[in-house]
Length: 258
Image 1: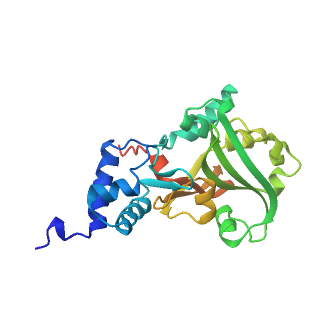
Image 2 (image 1 turned 45 degrees about the vertical axis):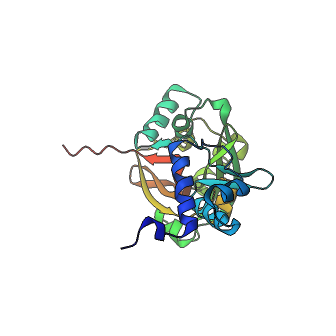
Image 3 (image 1 turned 60 degrees about the horizontal axis):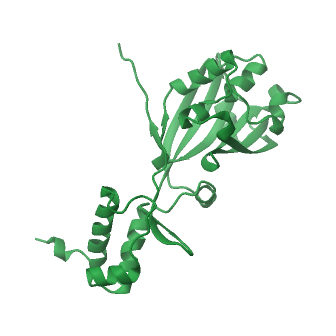
């Protein structure tokens, strides 16, 4: 039978460093011991230490930066995503509160919320057209967003609205973003009352642009959400690939079966 000592040396080094990181002996944000110190402590070669660190990096436990070294990845606040967050937006619309579901999830003030945005008019591709229930090629207003909390990028999304519904309205003006009440507030300004939201959630590894924009280290997956916003039976907004690093979010849904 194999014993722990049969494990490759780099894995034994990684196991011990992982234990220290997870126990807090190496606190989040702290620099790991130098390669020379690890070589001396574990009695291994430099290549073994580098393999161990590479394994921890692939697990998302450490980050290596030029000029700084390798450090235990800081723990970022975790957002709770539940169905009630869209009810919050309805309430924000009613009260005039400066906020969105994102600011409520992040527990930040309006002044700490920043939104990078790019708007353009595009024809609907077949998959987006199907989500809307319209013909492929129907013109859409596509809005690409990067959501920032206190300057830190936390989420990306591509949100589409039917162009004939929003053309020449304030909703089509990127300078009006961020909009209090989010999509719910924007649609309400057009006389459209949101009655339901459908979301489909998947997990995958981030593509390069997502990893760079959201500062996601290696080994960390993302959750992607496809959203359809309804007014009655009509789909009035579609978001494709709302992207959130998986270690910064938890899904929290209550299902009443009574």
